[in-house]
Image (cartoon, rainbow, N blue to C red; front, side, top):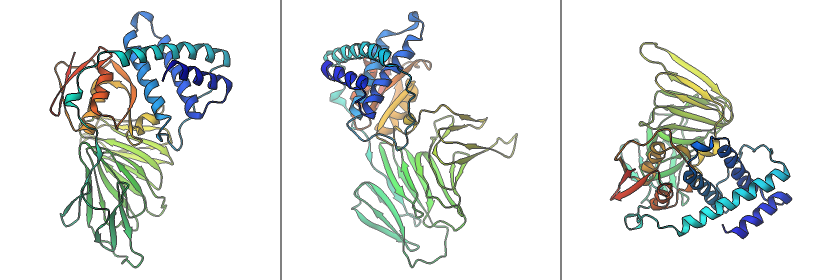
Length: 390
């Protein structure tokens, strides 16, 4: 974005002719600047502030041209008066644009020669008889048929289960498992019509045909669920010691083995989250989530977070990284999506946070370059190993 484009965007915003995406972009600039100005001036790392501003503006500008918007995104409060917005946004835009130019012209680390491509639609289906099918390599169309259910792969990277109209009402205990490896992702449409989006390094185990009174699946890793409503048959997800029970709703579960807590975030409807308590306190604890809330469950406790950034939670599903977190958390996501090993020469500061957005379609060099440019961290690529240095 050059200076003329930014000036035009500000003019449209102040005149009320900006699109929703353009309004969100300008207001995000203002919100970020407001957060910075509330800090003690002596505590501000101005280089990182500029970097954060560039990440936010450049990547959000790119996303105005793509379809990364959520169906029901929380609306931002209109708290900026016309005169304040015109003055504050202009100052922010100029600062960000100048830094953007400096970034583009700066000498950048030479990651390109060792670059690593992003993940892609990639998964393996294991049938109930043990047969494995590489969905990446399989041709589109019917893959198998079990219990009167046809299993097909589509050109859009989906696995679809369709029950024949004349299929027997009897149900057996045959299960399939789909696994998206590190550097992979996949979508599944289950026999009841529910949709599941699998993130990298994740797997889902499910019956070929659901029983009449219960629909139960087992998740390892992360997935976004759009559950088909059926009040007579509850849908249950078992994930790392917790059970999520719904009738029909949209929610995200993050339950990676290397994460301390299981995070269940509700977008619509209602879910009941239950947790197996420790052996010293046998039994279960449970809570009910409302839309926009997140349950955080660990072996020791479970709690509800009400101020959840839904864009942050669903960024992976919508094709980009969005982070406002420390380096270890960021690199855990990078490791899974790019299928790399991350090695730290010295432990990073857990309290220092990076903030920004970038498409998951970018090569790893672009993400590392942006983090590197802050001056707070540096990287080296050796094969599929990322060395993190001070």
